Image (cartoon, rainbow, N blue to C red; front, side):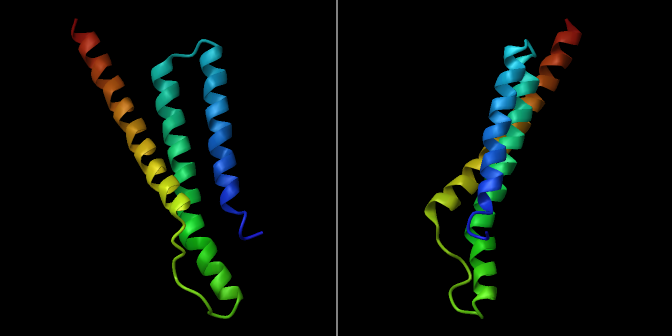
Length: 108
């Protein structure tokens, strides 16, 4: 059960992408939908990656009586964690761009 726990975060990321595509198909504006989806997917991938690299390793270490290392250098987990952080930050940039654009549109 511990080994597959990051999968829940990854499945939530996939579900978030599908939900965003569904909202776009219904005609919702792309900018708020994209920024929300990027933030949710980024958090899900980030937490899944962190759990994969640090959480699973240390929980297994505690269960097995202290054998093993503190961090398992799972390159895929680290990559997903970093991409998740980048997507979260990109979602914030898109939010900020939307606010700036609304402010500029109000000036015109």
